[in-house]
Length: 186
Image (tube, rainbow, N blue to C red; front, side, top):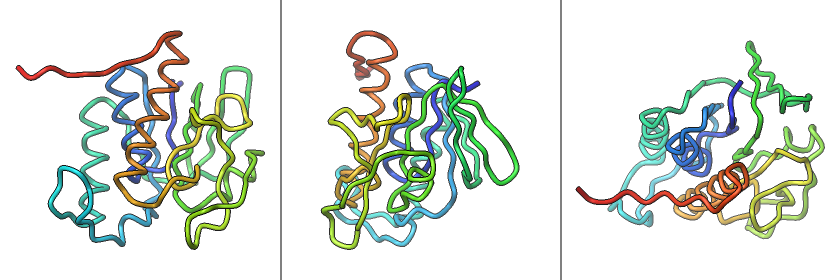
C-alpha cells in the first residue's frame, strides 16, 4: 500500500512526488508517457537556461526516484475508493494508495469517470479542468489535483510549483501541522 499515488509524471506530478518521497511517504508516480511537456522547448523555466520537454520530464522522474518514489510506466484505467483508500487499476496491474494526486495535464477523463467535479477552464485551449479548493483538494475525499488539470497555467514552472504546493498541503494535512522542507547548504 502506497501512502500517495500520483497520476501523471509531468512537471506537476514529478514535483509532487519529489516532495512526498523526500518527506518519507511511500510514493508511487504513474507515468502514461503522454505529457504535453514532451513536445515543448523551454527557455522560461527558472534555474534552467534552456531544456527540451522530454529532458525536463526525465529529470523530474529521476529526481523523484532518487528520493524514493517508485516510478511506473502505465496508464491508469480506473480508480475506486475502498475502506483503506483507493485501488488504482492500470493496463495490467493494480495498486493501492491511501491518497491520490491527479496531475494528468489536459486530460480530465479519468477524473470525471471517478466522480471528480469539473468546471470550465480559463487557459486558452483548456476547456475543462478539475474543481479544486486552494489547497488542491477535489470533492472526492482523499483525491487531490495539481497542475494544468487543476486549472493552473500550462507553463512548466507554474505546474511544477503547483505540484509542490499541493504535495506540501497534503503532507501538512497528513502530519497534522504545516510541513516545511528546507535543506541547508553544507
